[in-house]
Each structure stands twice: as structure tokens, then as C-alpha cells.
Amino acid sequence: MDIRVFKGLNAEWALVCAEPGSGEQVRGWLEQAGVLRRGEGPAELEELLGWIGVRDRRLGREHSDRWMRALLAVASDEGAEARLAARVVVQAMLDGAVRMTLSLLRPGRDFDEVGQVVVASLYGVVRSYPLHRARKVAANLLMETLHQASRELLNDDPQGLEWGAVLEGLPGVEDVAEVVCRKALAEQAVAGGLAVAAEELQPAQAELAELLLWGVQQGLLTPARARQIAGEVREESRAAAPEAGVSAVTWRKRRSRRLARLRSVAELWVQAA
Image 1 (spheres, one colour):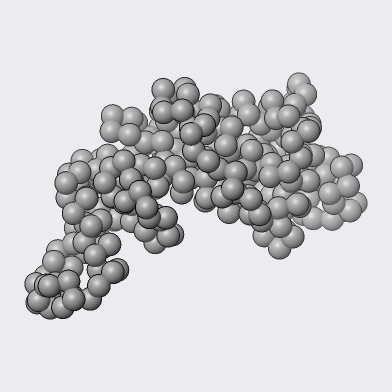
Image 2: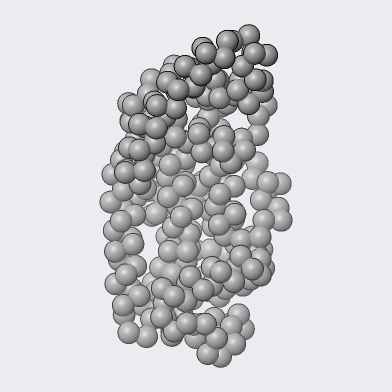
């Protein structure tokens, strides 16, 4: 899995943060918008963004909405300041962009090519964000990015996915990114036979589905084997071995083979990430 686009963005981010005064400039915009008190928060840009993320988790979505809208207002203009403001928002959304890229992978699609489409869509959405949409800013950014990237990739129309009720009440950027991408992942898992339509994927199930989908896309697992593993895991979660009509010895052998196969796929997955 080639992840050059995200490695490149992180390398670029390091250069942006090294620019003298970049952190103070961003902090100044947040002070002018009344999000921060004068002199509040670190003066270095990378530290400032991390500090804001911690406050988001503590203060909730309303805080996230306020600082994002303040920077999006600057990003909607032209010139160096607008580019800097947009870059900060894009960096804040980067984890969501990575997970969205994974959720949009299909057989024959290259990770880096999909990532480039997602990042380009995210930049466009950030620069043109309608500021009157003052609530759930991170959710709106991700949803519109998903719509644009999906259209660019000639994917099924994502308007059919109902995000609103799921996203209602979420506290911050990280939670929003997780839910948006988990919904897209669940759609793929059902389509690939790795989950049944009636199931709502729990975090552990979603991680397994993501691993299996990646293994199939990379040719490490056949679709049939991935479906078999998913089915065995579901069966284990519903009943103990004797109740499922399988001897304890056979059950342990099957579990051992499955774990060995998953472990080899997971090791490659971690290396690729």
C-alpha cells in the first residue's frame, strides 16, 4: 500500500510549522475570533494544534466548531494567510482523510491515488466551506469530502447513506471521523459478505472487517477465506464451541489456524501503515 500522499503532507506540515511566526499568526486569528484569550495556548504551530485537539476532547464539539469556523473564514479568502489557515484545518482532519481513503478502496484502486482524490476534495471543501453552517463543522467537512471524492471515483452516490442521525450529538473531530468512516466501512463489509445487513458493527468488528477488506484488496486473502473468517468470528461471539456442535479440539484447531492467518495479514497491514 503506497501512502506517499500522506507522508508528503506530514513532511510539508513540518515545513509549515517551521516557518517563523506561523503559530503566532494562527493563534492571533483564534484570539480575534474570541476562541482564545490573548496569549493563551502555545506559540508554536504544531504544539498549538495538538493543544487545541486536547481542548476539543475536554470541551466538546462546540469548541471544535468555533475554532474551525474561525480558520475557515480566513481560508475562504486568497493569499498566503488563506493557504495557511486551510492547511491547518486539513492537518486537523488528516486522520479522518486516511480512514476515508481506506473506506473508499476497491479492488484495482491504488491507495495513493484514492488518497490524492480525498485530499484534493478536502482542500476544495475547506476553501469553499459555507460559514453559515455553524454546527457540526467537522462532520460537514467530512461528509462533503466523502461526497466529492466518491463522485470523483465514480462510486455509488453516497447521498443514500444516512449520516445525520448517527452524527447527532458527537462531541469532537476524532469521533466524527471515526463514525463517518465506520459507516462507509460497514457498507463495504456487508457488500463483501463480511457482515450481515442487520448487524451494526462494533469497534472490534469494524477493525476486523477493515483488516479483512485490506487483505482481500492486497491479494493476501481470497474473498471466500475472508468471508469464512468473518463467519467463524461471528459464530464464536454467539455460542461456545459445544453449543455450536463442534468439538473443543476441532474448535481450537480452527481458531489457531485463523489467528495465524490473521496475524500474518495484520503484520503486513501495520508495516504498510
